[in-house]
Image (cartoon, rainbow, N blue to C red):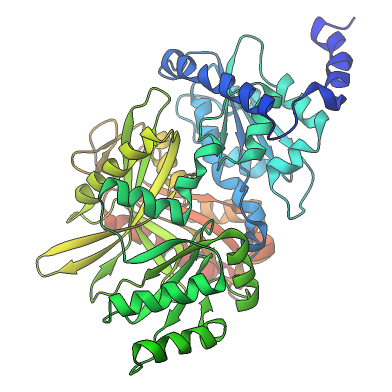
Length: 526
């Protein structure tokens, strides 16, 4: 005898296959429905989010809905979908359900690795409230686009939300594709309306900094053509003769992969410099992304637009980042600061971060971040985002330049969430420090780029076996230790992520060094 839900399933599926049943993507009707869905989210947030015993479902869509040509330059980009597995820790709430959708199936060993860390909840109890769904599609298309092409999968997501639960979507970033998915599922997104994503572009960031009155590098935005770049690069040197390099940035670049650098020649007058730039720009700029030609970079710039900025020099220079959150009630919080570790051409590529940022200025950059975030709130921004700075030491103080706004989760989001979930602690905005529930300070070093060709061939099972044997795991009693992520990328690419949590910055680094030493020893050619 079929139950009521099973009896209705064929009719529901037929409904979803009808192309006229859903508004066309980007249509006025879809925008109207999305606005209506999002308006109800504030009630859900106010009534259900604070209640750890509430019946709620989080649908995790870890899609990197970004420019795929630039994204393919990141090694193992598909496995960045595993970064949001930190949200499985929400299953510590005994009535919460999580639906996690990925391009390819995730190894059960990886899932178990996360679930065994849940405080106060058995793995079995958590697993009963977890639904894992996959597109079985490793193609170079964003996960959200893959889901939208699979109406049966959309129906499975709907059916995975228990009756009587409130639900919302948690995603890496929001675009028109995520908006379409939200409308088809009928549940809100905890993230920005795509209509305000301009403020997360490089041009929009500069406009936001200008509105907030926050210092940024000299430069020009809203550039589109080759001549735009030439004039901006030339004008920058004319107005600021001391600068030695300029940075060209794609509006929607990320992790520094959308940047390029050009060095100014010495000894040229204004007219000669302009002529040199005009004739040599296409030969002299150096794209940060490996294997991306200058021609391909410039074509991407013409289609996407971007900015030109002075390369900030300094004998002592740092790259702090401020993580912010605007909730559906309009409340603005600074939720963390990080000291970014950069590499690549002129240190433009994000590879890791220390938490928190340097004690000499973490509250100062946090304050600047809050000023900018308050402006973004007025422009309709919602959810988690980060603001990057360059900080230069001048005499006994620091000068901070706002660089860009990332209206999405990023490389500093999942490490902080892991720290928060594992320790049940909190970040103090006034001090810039994190404390566990029993008032103990915690620090970490995190990276998405632990990579070595000798690690290739290690399966998730191998890694966890090595970690357990050598004590490379998170100790729930001490609330310190090591957490791995992006484990699925290890065998093919020799790459993974790591979060090393310590009671001091030095202890966090010691955990990292020990982990690397163990992995190098275990994979050394005998």
